[in-house]
Image (cartoon, rainbow, N blue to C red; front, side, top):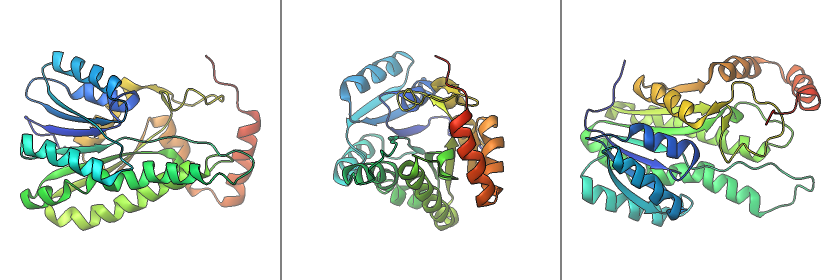
Length: 262
């Protein structure tokens, strides 16, 4: 089993709420240095203040993962202060459902630029230093949506599928340098991203439970890890189903699945 460094230095995007906030608070303790990134600096400041009460050293950056220069400037500033980094967690993301007209040009760009290109922007500044020291861990928080599309999730699923394939390639490319790459595929997590979902969500986790599952994937250097177990079971089956059978099941599920309980 792999372990994180004793005095670990961790960079987390999307850290102002949801899973990102839960991860920051999970790892915050004496001897840990956190670099936290988000667009909403008011919320990010609150997260940082709490993490400092837990003993962590915290640097915060108001930056948008869609903007490569903003992220690179933030990363370079962080590295100038801490010298190195152990673990990068690309968590920032957005969820979107398509409407009925299929002509919204802004939505596809926003989803792809945040969920896929944003991961590339997040990792890029840190890869050279990890290659030089021949260690490090790049972690992306992906989704079960990467494996099959549903009626209104095409954009979101496509962005996560792109992340999964790209990180697989990255993992192969960086393995000779001792750098681990983990693609952690979350099922349903009760956050701002899922509060508008009306149907029942099997295995729904809260953000703190999700952070613990992500830590498991990181500590064990998982290549691809689907969590929780309910999602792993269901989507492993979905991945191997022939298309026509999957179509029947997912269409029936959308029409007949019970409404989420409040």
